Image (cartoon, rainbow, N blue to C red; front, side, top):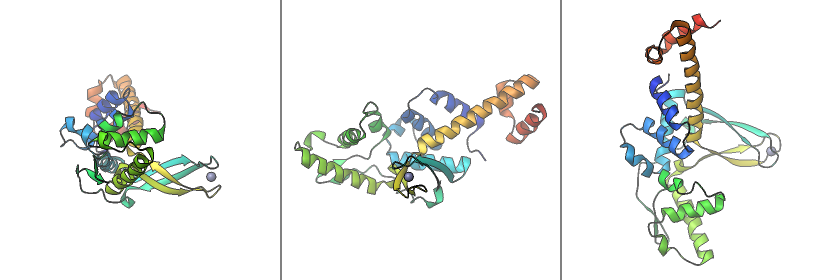
Length: 236
Ligand SMILES: [Zn+2]
């Protein structure tokens, strides 16, 4: 049973269609956490965002998430399924900074990620993200090796404090037995699903409007059961 009302689904889809994935994720977050003030969502930790999106996904489409990744060794497409029930419980919500080597780092948020959208090298982006998250970036060491070490430690500490910030799953390639960590982005996954539901809904509205002369709000006001019953009558 879909936890999102059809007119709300269409309006989120319409707003997000031309937006950047980070903004789409925020639209989904607003849908998932209506109790949160909308202007605070961009500053919430990514782990909290992901946990809210997963809860919305479970309520809307269930907890079984089928996905795939290409094997980095041989290119074989590996299908895998993630079960929301098997994921670690989301840690208690916190915006407490994470202290590493005397430096305080904020938990990465959508706003921090948005600052990196033009970074194309993932290594550099990861470093820039940590600089963004450092409460006093100017206090970070100048020495390249010391900085690299600190950033690695900070990355590990942030990941340990908030495992939901980046969900991943160990997968083994059936063709070459290469083992890899497949990262799983709930925001883009859920957006793809919402996109296909919205398109299907538009097809349904189109079919019923053409057959009966009903308006979009009239079609959307029908329950799923009635809409399906009328569709069965107009589609051969
Ligand atoms: Zn392989």
